[in-house]
Length: 316
Ligand code: BDR
Ligand code: CA
Image (cartoon, rainbow, N blue to C red; front, side, top):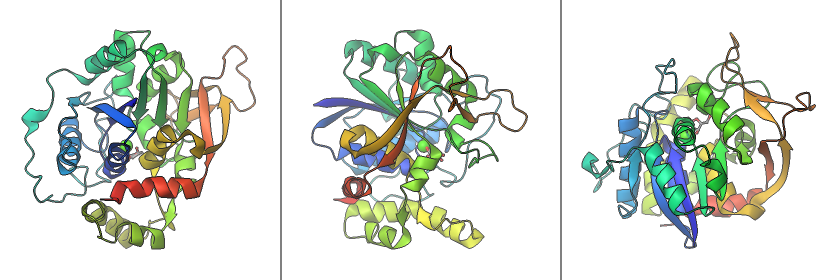
């Protein structure tokens, strides 16, 4: 079996990424690491446990990680996915969750241990701020080179952000971590930018069927997405499609032949810009000749194949 670790800030889309990987018979999910982001780290840890309990998979350990960014200057968690990060719902048969189920080992420490116990075998999928990965890299500078591969959801390539005018949420929330990971991990990062995720969203008609309530998981997704979608529609800010950031990132790690087009580039993160802190900077025209490509920007996927993979989230 392939070995995966998910590092996330669950989050309704992180939760679906988790449900997707749990549905893969050929993948062993070794652990879930949690980080602040869509909510504080207590809440994101609790949300991961709730999903695992819902799926009867509490055998998978959850390690709690960082509750703030490396320099901690952004006292910021989003309420976009609800105050608890998962749509503020009660999950029958799951809640209240026992937080003593969270492992005692801190997430970056567990990451380093697991990667050293399974050298060159682990696929790491990161769908939140990169704080835990940056700390793991500080603890063990060879950490990245011992991974099989790494997939990251974060950054934006076309200048428009989704949390500030210029930056994407995961990179903005801990820019130093994103900068450090991109520049120091020593391994090509498979990056799903905000734009590529949004380009591969689905129509609202698709979403109605996806959440038609015919399975337990379909009911759960419908329930935890409900407040987010209603709010967006009420505010008139809903896009013409449903966004699938972390789901696409997980899908790209699960099924390699989903990818149709990518480009290898040198990319880094703006740390000082008055208006652009946290923005992904791509050296499209190779101006930084001293830098080798460090990022494989994933640009286009087979939508039909992604469609069948995302349906595994709600299959039972
Ligand atoms: C990212 O921000 C979070 O709200 C989502 O979970 C996703 O990882 C998209 O910018
Ligand atoms: Ca996320």
